[in-house]
Image (cartoon, rainbow, N blue to C red; front, side, top):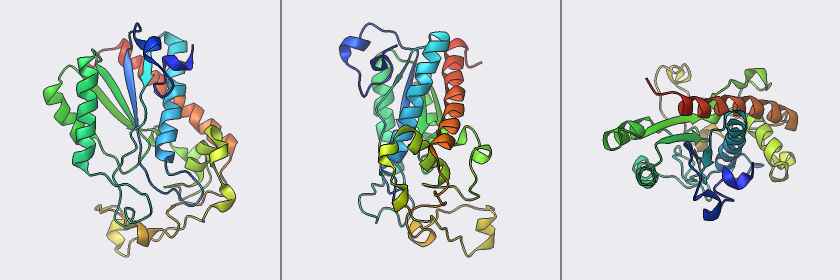
Length: 253
C-alpha cells in the first residue's frame, strides 16, 4: 500500500482516477492556540494522521478503500478565544456552507459515504447532517470526535485534561515530536464558573476562555509522553478502522 492511495494531501490524480473508493474521511479541526507549546493546527493534524493510520489498517485487514481528505482548519470558538492572535472563529453557517459544498462535490463524483473526524471540541455537525439528508438521502454521513472514541482514563494520569493537556500533547508527541515544545508549556490551570449549577452541568454556556485559562490550555501537559500517545492513538485507530469496514460491509438498517 502506498500512502498516496489513502491520503489526498500527498496524492495525485494519476494515482486515484481508476480506483473505486468505499469511504471518504474528512478531518475537521480548528485554528487556535494550544497552550504555549503545541501548534495552532493541532486539531487538524491529529484527526488527519489518525485517519490515515486507520485507513491503512482498514485496507490491510479487509480491502476497504478510504480516502482521507485534507483537514478543514475552520472551527467554532468560545468567547475570549477569537481575540487571541491568529485564532480564527467560523460561524455555524460558514461551517455548514463548507460541508454542503464538500458533500455536493463528492456526491457528483459518485461517493456515497462520508465520515467527519473532528479534532476540535467546539465543532458540532449533527444539525448540518440532518439538513443534508433532505437533499442527499442516499449519502451516508457520520461524525465523530477522535478524542471521545475511547476514554483516556486508562491511558493518562491528569484529572483535568481538556485542551492541550496530557492526552493531546502525548498524541502529538507520538506523531510529530518535532512540533512539541513541552519545556515551553504553561500549567493549563483552569478557573471554573462561579455558578455552581454550571459546574454540575445542569445547563450549558460556553466558557469565556480569557477567564477560564491563562495560557489557552486546560489541563497540565507535563506528564505527557510518546509512549502514552502511541498506546492511545493505536487503540483509537483500531476502532476507526473497524468503523470504516463496518459501514462498507453493512447497510445502515
